[in-house]
Image (cartoon, rainbow, N blue to C red; front, side):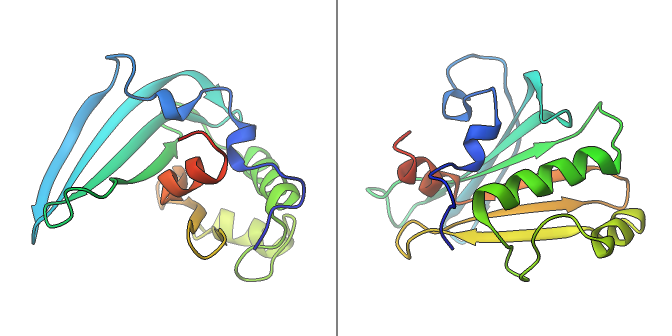
Length: 166
């Protein structure tokens, strides 16, 4: 799937997430090692609310002990922690992602009645898988049972490479 207008999800944000570690305003919230793979999760309160929804960011950094010369794989998650969510904001995010990337992996475009029902039932989930086969990344917009919206960018480092921000 290619972008429609040479934009990416990063163009929707005020905060430059590639600078996450430059300030000391983040905290390590978890660290695990599973079969030689380290996963460290960091979190910070954002200096501004993104898309009128997201006020917190988490970076999950993966490091493979068997591949010490390779680059770290990073996932980015944006959360609404202190923001009360409404379907209007979620619809806005879906429509902005559609404007940039087109239809999602399930061939859905703009916000539809099915999304409204899924949002009400707390099972809303949209996914866009993107990239050129080498630098693949995925964007997931999902709501939890507690009405917390998460925007996940899996393989965030690949998105940074594609947008020349890495």
